[in-house]
Length: 136
Image (cartoon, rainbow, N blue to C red; front, side):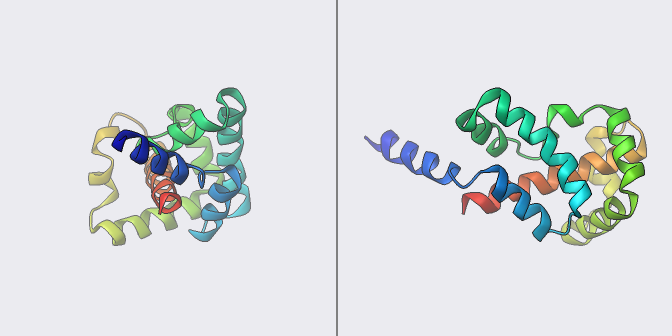
């Protein structure tokens, strides 16, 4: 019975993880329309492929990991080159929030290009933060 109660609460809280809510949160944290749309295209493809429930569980389970679709170093570099001002602004904000340099925050990504590291840092941190916000 306890599992049912906790399972129900978890399911109910996952209901807030919708594409619209995610996009709204992206705008709230300062993503511009073009950057948010690039990320949303990737999220929408995953949503359409796996369905709502599996998408919600996957998004909630990111836990500071980069979505598989964005692990590609060349794609991340392209995103950086298109949105370098936004990425650099977000990196500075993350450094302030965590009191850690972006280099330390991306130690697990040190085998890839600096631009790609910054993009992946911003995306994994911000999407994980959005998931947490939507659960509360």
